[in-house]
Length: 411
Image (tube, rainbow, N blue to C red):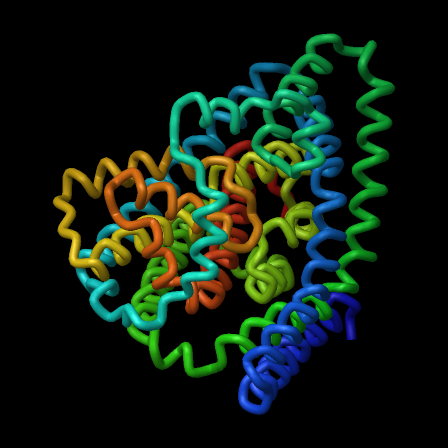
């Protein structure tokens, strides 16, 4: 059995063991014991995610700078960037609109039981929420220090610095070649580290699944069955739309792409972290045939601008909370919310529950009780699994499509 197939098997086994372990804890242990074991089990996931996070910042910087330099000239950088942003904006708007339409058709908020609110988790999220303002948005996008951006894994800020660095290196020409060569070598070393880090994935998956089942139990699916069902219908429609457009452009290559990204999809789904698979996704897209210069440029941008699953969930969750409280919002207000989310969501971290912070802030802006986030927290982990997997699919398709448009996709 191939090493990659072996790892996928281990991850599936870890998911099954996690469900069984979590269920046994939930059924046989006291609430205090459940919480204690859940906290300890989460440490396994924390170890895995931290190992991945330690290599994301240097990998984004090295690959993006080298990618820009390999594009050869500023005209090429602008052309590839323009094509990528065209896909990102179109996909983001469609995802947000889809979430809005689903809420208005299915009314998932009316199915939410107000007695199941997770108030403790909501307080933690509200504490992280800042009121949206143009000043805070600008501060979030543009780095004050590249080292601060790296230490906080602020991918969008790091992308801004890397673009300036790469463009400057391209403008200098031959004088910058030794630096580019060194960064290229560093990126290959980091990608080798990825193979070592991925060996910890089954442990991270086991900890994440077991911890949430231990505290919530399988009964959570009964309480939130309609809410989860409507959301999964939305995810299915979003996948159909993304793969449909991908098929129009990539044609017969789409099944091969899905086979390549199957393992990153599974890891993202089970750990609820897009960041957890960024290095592995980089590697698999290059193996699929995308030129390294395009992958290095488009994929980091996608992680800041193209989180399709999270985008759809933001309108879905925000409007569902309004429905749960019986707050009527006309179409004009909903469209305004959609545009606000289009702005505030850019650069959200690809880590668990980051999108909920944006939802909480948006609710406060539109006079929806922000503590309403407590209503969807019990089921959010399972929704997060689906939206995270969708984020990975969207970025893989975006990178492959831009590669095709650039005639940089090998057979």
